[in-house]
Amino acid sequence: MNVSTLGRPIEILLVEDSPGDVRLTREVLKDGKMLNNLNVVGDGVEALAFLGRKNQYANAPRPDLILLDLNLPKKDGREVLVEIKTDRHWQRIPIVVLTTSQAEEDILKAYNLHANCYITKPIDLDQFIKVLQAIEDFWLTIVKLPAE
Image (cartoon, rainbow, N blue to C red; front, side, top):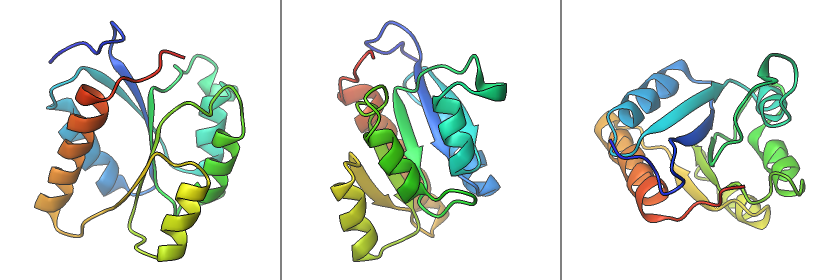
């Protein structure tokens, strides 16, 4: 595993309520090419608390990349996307929307809210693994991420 061009492991925030998707994402990124720290929260309220370093997240690292599901409990991913992209401290954090929704309205809304990309989760396990590996290849090894 390589250290990122940031000179440290890449901090990833996964906002996902499906334990199976969390487990699979953790496994793929653990075996990946780039050294990373995967932080996981299960809903939109927790995601914003993590970013704001509130309560149990007081010492949370600033993510270099956010993987965001849209269909979340408490506060959905669309609302989280709005809050992140309108906050000057967080707006430069790249957000990959990774969701089951194929609805054109969700795709348009995500891009209108400044998501950096929109990926529909494949149903097939092997395809899902390939998608996660492609995300890692692109976002963690090719793209230059902002330091802050």
